[in-house]
Every structure is written in C-alpha cells, then in structure tokens.
Image 1 (cartoon, rainbow, N blue to C red):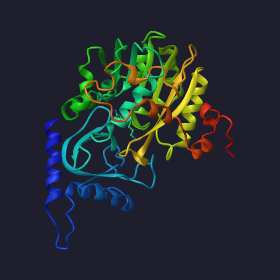
Image 2: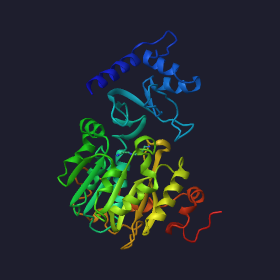
Image 3: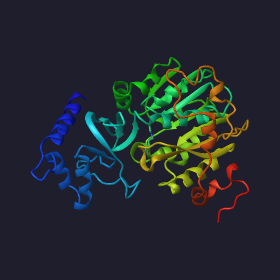
Image 4: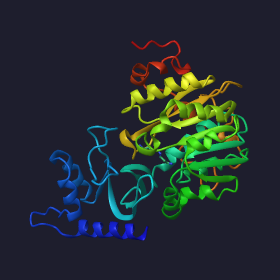
Amino acid sequence: MEGGVQRGLECQKIMDGKVYDNGEKAIPSCCLKARAAVPESDAKCHSTVVSGWFTEARSSSGEKQLYYNNPMWPGAAHSIKVEKILFQEKSLYQEVLVFESTNYGNVLVLDGIVQLTDKDEFAYQEMIVHLPLCSIESPKNVLVVGGGDGGVLREISRHTSVEHIDICEIDEMVIDVSKKFFPELALGFEDPRVTLHVGDAVEFLKNSPEGKYDAIVVDSSDPVGPAQELVEKPFFETLARALRPGGVLCNMAESMWLHTHLIEDMISICREIFKGSVHYAWTSVPTYPSGVIGFILCSTEGPPVDFLNPINPIEKIEGAVKHRRELRFYNSEVHTAAFSLPSFLKREVSSLRDSSSTKGLVFP
Ligand code: SPD
C-alpha cells in the first residue's frame, strides 16, 4: 500500500516540475511509455491525464495499460484537476486510485472510473437509499450489495426502524482506503447494526434465507469488470428471492444520456421478475459521466408499494434529517420529482411509457 502511494507522489512531482522553453509541461517517462503502447489517436488522452488532470479513461488489467475514452461514454471525457495522488494500488479485482483534487475534495477511482468525490457524493448516496427505504413502512432488515465506501450505510443509519444491515462488498481494499481517505462516508461502518461480509454477492445471496430482506440496495460500479453479472437476469432473480413479499430493490442504473439500451434491458428483466412494480428514477451527480445517474426501483409481489409517494417520509422519522450530518440533497419533494422522466427517455425506452407518471400521454 505504502509503495503505491510513493509511486503516485513521484509521478505527481515530475508532472508539476519540469517545464519546456515553449511553456509546455514535460510528460513523465512512465506516461511516455504508456503513450507508445497505444495508437497515436488514443495516446493523446493520456497526456491530458498527466498534465495534472485526471481524465476518466479505461485501463486494462493485463500486462499493458491502455488509456482511452471509456466505451461506456464514447466521445466524451470528464476531467478533474489533481492536487496530490494519495493512493494507487491494484487490488485482487481492480485498480484503486484515490487523489486529492483542487475543487472536489478527495476522489475515489476504480479501474479508471470516478466512484465518488467528497463534494457531490451525497446526491448519489442519499437518493439510492432513501428512495427505497422511504417507500415502505418500517424497514427492518436491509442488504447492501457493494457500497464498500460506507456512504450507503451512513444513509441507512438514519432509519431508526432498521434493526439489521448486511453489507456484501467484494473488494476489501475499497473498504480500507475509504476508512483512511473518506471518513465522512466510512463512518457508516460504525453503526452497530452493520454486519460486514467481504465476498461475492452472488454467492452471499444464494446462501441467504428466502424473503429475509425488506430492502436491498445495489451500489455497484459500472457493469464492466467485476460488476458485469450484477446487471444480468440470474442476479435479479437472486435479489427477488431474498426479498420478502412487497420488499423493495434499488439498483444503480446508469445515465439516461448514455445508456438507454442498458436501461431498457434492465427494466425488461426487472419487469419479468418483480411482479409488484418497476420504476426508473434519477439524480444529478456532476462528476459522473453526463452529470446524471439513475436507479431502478422494484418491488416484489405482495403489499403494493407506491414509489412515487413515499409512505415513510424522511421528515417524519425522528432525528433522521440531522443524523450524524444534515441531509444535503434528499427530501420528500425531490423523492417524487426523481420519478419524472424527460420525454426523450420515455420515447427511447418503450418499457417506461406505461409507468404511472406517463399515463394518458402519447409518445410517437
Ligand atoms: N459511473 C460511476 C458509477 C458509480 C456507482 N457507484 C458509486 C459508489 C458510491 N458509493
């Protein structure tokens, strides 16, 4: 771990140091090697990374490292100015990078993709938790899949009705770096109701009793690499089996600007499996690609769940709004608004046309 930090700092020193006569900054030798390993057109992206800016890119975990625009958001790359690299190491599953940025606080990056920044993480964590938990009465047993940074746990902690929280995170390194560099999120692990399971969620769910959970939150990374199977049908079947009748699932579901096909596929799969209801909601996270991210909310057959009108409003749960730190994004108005979908999305994702928010409207 320490060696990784050291390597990162060295690289940063070189980046910040040498300046050519024409005013351009020198590119460190490690980066020149990486550039030489990729086609000229792709290599250009990497020189931007090493000029003191992090740019979302894709790196292979094989012998060579390739840096280019991530295929999940073609033709665009968001950059964040780096102040200092704090940690970089390869875990058993992915590359883990933490850096201090000039304007967004600390940033967690997995396999080249921003997972969270101190500045805007709350818009994601608050929504992925309170959309499902405020939609049912008195949630007691909750499961978190992924979420190793602890932010989702921090938000579940606001719910006094909750008695037990299981979290299944595959990558222990994510938990460790979060405890060190993201204490405002990792404080979620301090809740005595939390039981941590380090391992594969698919295996964990296979061994969970049927109907155990009132709510499940899937806080995964994008469906490339270790999270690939988390958007496939067998996984959703396992989730549904672990929920009680009328239990709820909230699953990260990418960006409406970039991934309508993925959203369509996930919704069709969920409609087959979850016989209660299936909805799409979204929030704004400036440091995610396209600046928005969505969630699929599903309920199993049983007591009906009205996702659009929370039955368990956060404002009525004693102490919830100010627990540990005040809510910054979520409230009951935002909850309902999150299910309002732009016309282009309803047009492109045909399965969203028949949701209750579109009743009576025609989308040619
Ligand atoms: N495109 C990035 C999606 C990241 C989703 N997971 C974020 C983890 C925050 N707890």
